[in-house]
Image 1: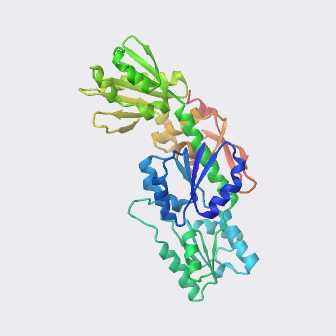
Image 2: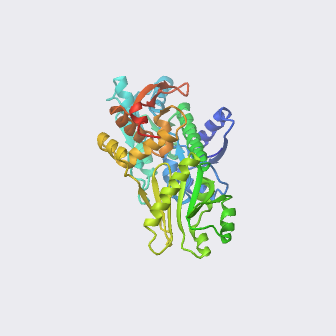
Image 3: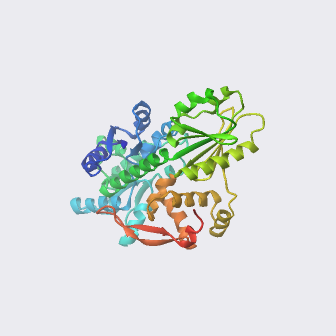
Length: 420
C-alpha cells in the first residue's frame, strides 16, 4: 500500500521513526514550509497513492479542492487532548510557566477545557483562540487567516499579559519566532500520529477490498460479437441467459473502464443492470434487480442502473449526469430507522457495514473508515444502535501504548436477524 504523507518537517520525521512498524506500507513524504502549499503538492504529484495522510486538518483544508477534484482517499492525524496536556505540562515542568501566562491556539478549545476540567483548573487558561469552524465550513470561500493568529499571540506578549505562545500551526510558530515572540509548537503525540497512520491503512484496505469485489453486468438482449472490445476492456467473461447476457468482472475494472456508450454501437439501445457484491451470488442478485429497475425507466434512451451492497442505485444517462437514489423500500430498514430516529440511508449503511465486515467485533474507528465519516459522527450513530440493543459493548482495545482504550462493539441477535 502506498500512503502519501503531507506535513511539516517534524511530522515527516515522526513518520520516519514509526514506519518500521508498518512493513507492508510504503510512505511517500511531501514536505511543506507552509500548509497552504498542500494543494499545489497534491496537484503536482503524478504517481498514484492509495491514500493521502495529512499532518492535520489545516493542510487538508488548503488541499481539499484538489482532493475532491481528483477524488482521492485521505485522512488526517487527529488533534487530541494528550497533545494539549503534554505541551502545558512541559512548559510548566521545564520552564516554570503557568497556564495563566500562556496564549494558545488550537483546532477546538473544547479539547483543552476537557483536559482542564478533569484537572480542576478550567479557569486558569485565559487566552485561547481556536478555528473550530474549519471542521464544519469547508467552503471554497472561507480562508484561514494565519496573520490573525500571529497578531493575537504577538499583541498579548507585547502587552505583558503572556510570557509565551503555544501554537498548533507550524507556520504561525515560525513567524512568531522571526518576530522575536517566544513560542512553542504543540507536542505531536505519538499516539495521534499512529492513529492517523492506522486510519489511512484502514481506508486503503477497505478500498482494495472494494475494488476486488465481484462485478456482474447484466445486459438485456443477446450477446453480439461487436461487444468483444468492451469485454476485453473489462477483462471479463460472458454467459448468455434466456433473454439477457452477463459479463463477470471486478468492481475496480468496471469503475475505471465502464462506459455505456461503448455498447451503443451494437445497434440496440442498451438496457443494463450492474451489480457489485462481496460474493458472486450477491453481485448477480444486485445486477438482476438493477436490470429490472432499468427496464422500468428506459423510456427511449439508454438505461443503466447500478446496485451494490449498500443498496445505492446509480442512474447513467446519455448526458452523463449521475443521480444517486437510495433504495429504502425494505420494511425492516424503515422500521429500524423509525424506531431509533435515524435516516433510512444511515440504517442501510450500518447494515452494509455489518454484512461486509469480516471481524465479529468492531470499533467506532472501523465504522468511520468504512463510511468516510468522522469518528465523532460514527460514535453518535453507534450510540443510537446501542441504545436500542442492536449492538452491544464487547470490551475495549488499546492499539498503542499511549491513549485511551477504544470501545469494541458486537452486533446482537436483534440486529443479525435483519441481515443475510
